Length: 91
Image (cartoon, rainbow, N blue to C red; front, side, top):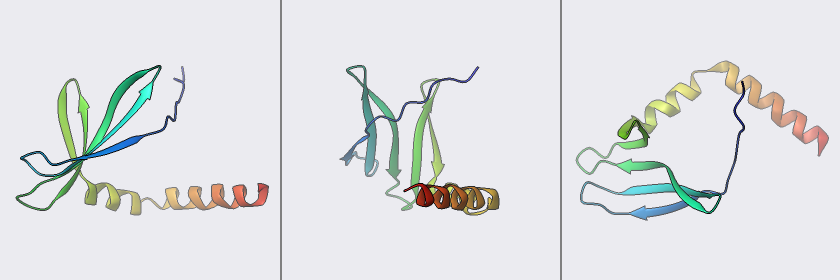
């Protein structure tokens, strides 16, 4: 069974906690504010992390690793080019 997809407006708020800088991504769904994820900077290393929660546990994945993974998937680039070309033809 496919779950419905929602694409709400995302709000971004910068904070400067003691452990570094953080961009908090949140949205409002049915009148309730939900934290979606964060972009966190480590002041000790300068590393930038994508942070989300699983079972109330913070999970951080390096942004550089996500970027590298996306760049290494040729099927993604092919699919994206096809979708953009189709959208441009339909515009």
